[in-house]
Image: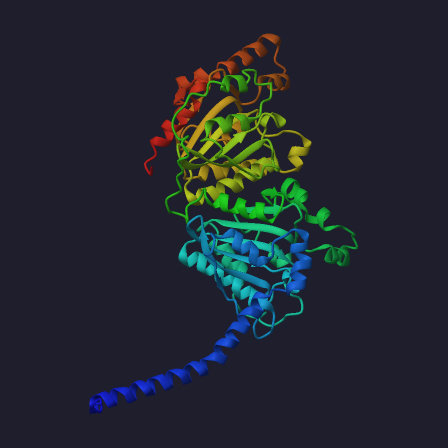
Length: 510
C-alpha cells in the first residue's frame, strides 16, 4: 500500500486542480467571444455575398477584390488592415480591402475597392482605411498600390464630413517618397478616381473606365447622353487625355504589370535601386545598328529597334506608349542597372516633340527624379512641332515645361544624338553643354542647327548658293560640335551600347 502524499505534495495537487478548473472555465468563457470574432471576420470577408460576387465578378472572368490583392502579393504574405471596419454598420470591410504584404520579396501596401459592396463607394470608414495605408506607406517607406473600381463618394453617408483626415492629402504627401501605382480595373468615378492622377503609374484594363463623374451625373448636369467608354474608356484616357499610362487585357495582366513596374524601383526614394543579372549585362558591339538607322535623316525608322538592342535583353518597359507617340519613354536595365530612357521616334511625325510628348516627358522625368535612375536621352528630332494645331495645343508652354523638368533633373544624364537635332527640340533632350551630363555622345553624320536648313532657308529666302552652304554646314555639325567639346566623343553606331555602359560605370553612386 502506497504511503499517503506528503503535505507539500497534497498542496501541489490542489493547486494544479484549481489551475485546471480555472483554465477550463476561462476556455469556456472565451469560446463565445472567439466565436463572435470568427463570425464577424467571416461576415467582413463575404464582400457583397457569394451570389453577387459570382454574378458581378467571377462569371465575367474577373477577379474579386480579395483575389486581386492575393494576386498582387507574394503567396501567403497578405495581412489585412482594418478588416472589421464596417462590422457595426454591417458593410463588409466598408467596401475597401487593404493591407500589407510582399511583392517580389519586398514589403508593400495596397488597397482594393470592392465593387460588390455598395458599388465600391467610399464612406467614412473607407476614407479612414485609405488614409491609413497611405500613412503606413509613408511611415514604413514602402510602395503603395491602389486598385480602383468604385462609384466615388457615398452620397448617402454624411457622417465624418467635418474636420477629419482626407485620404487625398495623404496620397499627395506620399508622392515622390515611395513608388505609387494605380490599377483601374472597372468603372472608377469621382473621389476614388483621383487616386490615379496622384500616382506615378496608372494601368487600365480594357473593360475599365475613369472619369470625374459618370454618365448619369453627366446627363443630369449637361443633358448629354454618353457611354462610359466614350466618356473615359481606355482609348480616351491612354491616347487622348493621357490620364492613364498603359492598357492591358484584364485584371491579372494589370496586376502583373504593377509587380513588374515596381521591380525597376527602389523601395523608397534614396534607397538603392534594384539590379538584375540575366546573363546579358556585359558589353557587345551592335553590328546591325547600321542596318536599322538610315543615314538620310528624312527617312523614318522605329527607335524601339534601337532601344531593344542597346538595353539588356528583354528589359525595356515602355510607359504610356499610346500618348505622345513621337517620343518613347520607359524603364530598362543596362549592365544590370535600372535606368530610364527618353527617345525621339522618327517613325512618328519625324520624332518632333508635340504637346502630348512634352507632357509625357515632363511627367516621367518628375517621377524618375525622385528615385535617382540614370536617364538616357536618344535624340533624333527636327525640333518641337510647329503649326496652328501645335500652337493651339500649347506647345510653347508644354515644351518649356519639358525643358524645365530636364534641366532640374538631378539624376545622372547620358545624351546621344543619333541622327538630327534641331533648335528647342535638341534642348529638351539634354543636348545642351553645361547641362550636367555624365556623358554626351553623337553618331557621325548628324545634321543639326537652329532649324532644318531646307525649311529655314525657304523662310529666310536664301539663294541657291547660300542654301547649299547652310545645308553643308548642318551636315558637318557633328565634327564642329566635337571640336568645341559640345560632345565628349563621336562614336561608331556599333559602339553605342558599350560607350553607354562606360558612362554608367563612372557614376559615383555605382
